[in-house]
Image 1 (cartoon, helix red, strand yellow):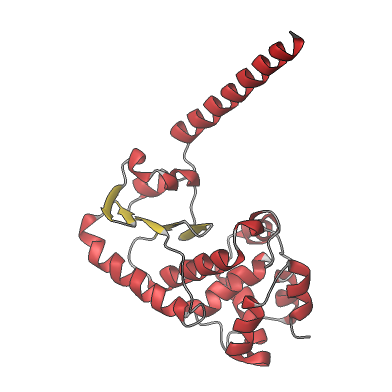
Image 2 (cartoon, helix red, strand yellow):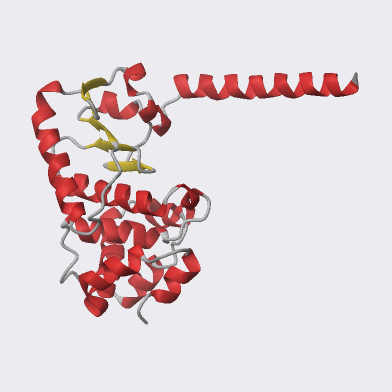
Length: 235
């Protein structure tokens, strides 16, 4: 009897929590709406593309194709097939909360909220997609790549110009301390995104200069866990 009562209470609590999360999902802007964008007024204009500007579809397709091609030079065995949600207006962007210019959710969704097509943003996010796909689901709980490297690699391979830009050793050391997403968000909370992303880009560029682009690719593809990856970095 007691067991039946406890099971009933447990189910009631679970149902209540689920209902609460569903209400929050529907009523409060959040990035997880990217998994059901049409519910929030974002039109599907191609199999993997949702946007608020149908007239931009060809430009979006070209940007995605170019990003795929760019990433394939580093990740030749691409298998990820993400869906893109591309916002050109603040109304669209606000449906997903306070967004940066680009955001990748795992290797399944990419949200881009720029006023126009910026190829570097597409390139950057596609690198994230392929890196996340390479790492797999286990990295959700035990990421093998520190966030500074994740962001730095995406920036370095996107075509952003971190080469020749001066960043002090202190800045690069500081950015390398941002290993978790929480630590990274704390670093960039001052809004100086270009400087922080640039320092992360420069940190990865330094690695590439020491071991070459092929060595950098091998470093990424051979990583099995965080400790092994960090121990494999050139001193």
